[in-house]
Image 1 (cartoon, helix red, strand yellow):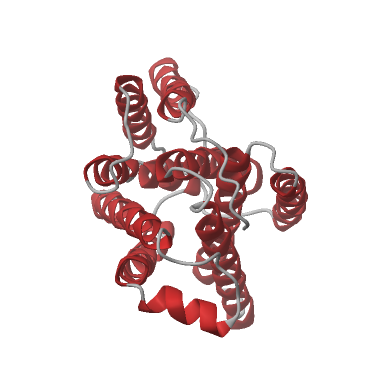
Image 2 (cartoon, rainbow, N blue to C red):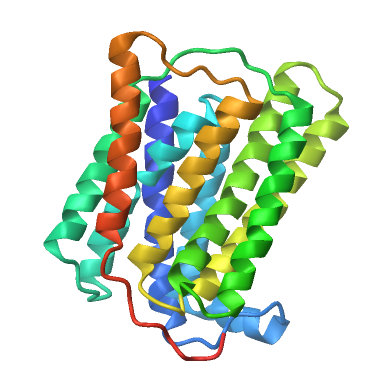
Length: 280
């Protein structure tokens, strides 16, 4: 279990550092699209291409970790990688970081650590019907957020939540594939789960790259992390039967962890960047 914790933390730091490099790269690039000439420009950019490679490598590490710990613990631990992004964003990208934003980051990291400290071993199973219901609700949420984005309402918030929802869907599908393999399911179901996970990860990556041209990296990725944490916790309890502490002390620590996360994120993203009027 300690190995899974360390692997998740390393994956989180690498993934968020990759996002910081991509943020630097998009300054010199046109709006992203699926056309090959545009994609080639992105891949040839040393910052964006390097960030992409780092994030993909660490995503492979995270896939291994997903099979070892519940997603309601995995996602908050992964969010501690924001520490690396904030440091990079301040030193390299020269984006301003106010004292209350550092406080927000400290609260977020503390909450993630407390979440890991209250881990309980539970049944390794998932309820297919509940899982499909959760997927349907999350896809509906994506459509609503895209509507907000198209209307240029809360661009950073909608962008972060869209990518966070997609990454959550990817994590959920991969966790289901891992559990299916453990329970002796047919290989076709395992391959299907992994393929769905990859599809949502690519979609989330595309949305996040589009959003990085809207404002600062820290607020967008912070909203992404908050949404991913919230969705993973709720789906973990609802569809995977992951245990929630019931005894007084663990229950208090888990509740305190959630409170720290939900208090830390607004502080971290309080000073939202001005809306970018460039065409997306």
